[in-house]
Length: 450
Image 1 (cartoon, rainbow, N blue to C red):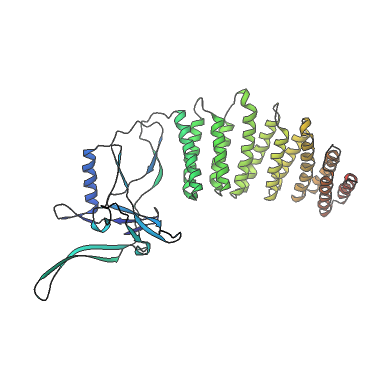
Image 2 (image 1 turned 60 degrees about the vertical axis):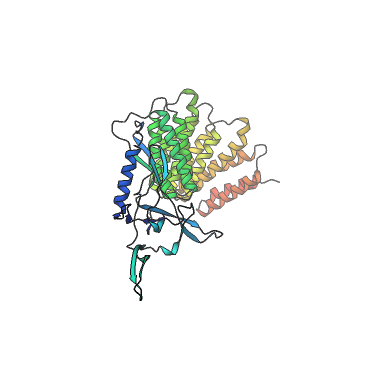
């Protein structure tokens, strides 16, 4: 009995089996000969021609003299574990059968279809070696006694069965190019498998599949007629799931895949607006993933591309300027919180330019005004944080004017605007910008509800 930590299982390895002739044979040889004989009787089905450069294998195989013991709960106990004899599948000609042990030590209850359990503590980390042999002796009266006995000794350490799950292998050479339907189905199957592994608290196994999934999505998107927006959306969802579960490096990989697919795509006119916003948002979220993965320099380097993508989007007819401005504002805040003051200023200035350069629709006037006042205030704050005091002083009057404009709108929250102005005044005063602080405080007093 040996422990296999990689597979999280215990194996009963039949080192020696007795043949029908009464002679012993090494278990590994007997297993190979038996499998070869069965394959002659029932040849494996012919493999179909590969339809992709990779193949998916559910699991690998192990020698048939390796009998699995699986950890299960003791009946009526949610904590204590015991080991239950299991069975590996033997698949021949499309038929599936269970590989059964051949030695008496591992067969108790098998013929009666009863389970067989071993206490977990009976198999230490070094394993256990159990030997069965006939014994013979003579009694004092001359009679001969023969019995079958078993001896238990310390094992020789852990072992590895090589059992593996969810394997992606290279297809045989000469395979035909994959179809678009096949690739998107495979990519989304891999995405679902990653989600399932995450839900099953197996993050390492999930992360190991991400590269293959991203590559498959890229291959699909490069084919003529591919639904590029579908592939990009799937990658965006995958990146978000990975980020939420702390797999930041994998989230970066999936997020970069989404960006690359969208950046290399020329959509038809009826999809241009949606594609441009999807690309801008994907670039923004990639910066978030890079920051979470402690890749701050790389995140900062991506900010100009994010700003350009949003500027490109709002230049299109029908663009949602308020949403775009809100996205840039969130990006600027994240950058500032992580000490990336220069990129925060760049994103904050872009938010202001977008909001100030576009007239909102009637139902968005109030939200537009609130975003603009907040954006101008935060830009001053980012400049102060980055020790760019002259620029902060130059921007302060525009921030105060934006608060006054907002407070003049019907249904504006003048109390909140006044409080924000007082906060702005405090920041300006702390930075030594006394006259600018006085202007903010005066405006706060002027718009404070009676």
